[in-house]
Amino acid sequence: MFKFLTRYKSLLKYASLSAATTATILTLTLANYSNHLLLAQTSALQTTISGTSQSPNTTGTVVLTETAEGLRITGTIANLTPGEHGFHVHEYGSCGNDADDAGGHFNPAGVQHGHLLSHGFEHAHGGDLGNIYAAEDGVAKFDQVYPGLTLADSSYSVMGRSLVVHANPDDFATQPTGNSGARIGCGVIGGG
Ligand SMILES: [Cu+2]
Ligand SMILES: [Zn+2]
Image (cartoon, rainbow, N blue to C red; front, side):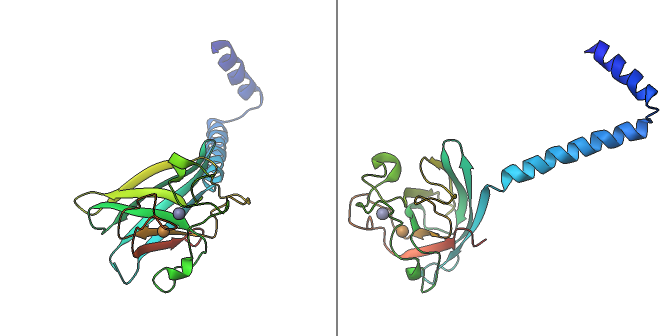
């Protein structure tokens, strides 16, 4: 390593490169590196959750990231009643009419409602993300990877669909919704 540095130094000398030029090269290298990071981050998508008229103060941000293990869904949603709230990907990318326009649960396999991580794609909707848990302060924080879901072009893509938060817990059994009650928060995936 030392030998290499010495050699590098002498090369620099040979090329009459000033210290300033060396600094420029280093800066360019670092700039390139951060460009790479930015590119890597373009596979992450931020979705803003807004409250419906059932819960107008509900607000939050969800970030969806492609990982080697699946789609990572992380987020913080505030102004919820403490406790569990059903959380799903719904079929359509619209939050109109108090999120009724989002349609039913995203169900690419045409199967029954359940819990995607527990029951898999054969026994749960692709949109059955489970429940999020709001603490006493009404804030729910979550971070979960869902193997098989993606943002890429595929029948399991959630891109252009919507994320919906419900008033009540999902029981993972009642068909076809999990009986999680009113739609209180909604955001369109890819809608910003
Ligand atoms: Cu739902
Ligand atoms: Zn479902």
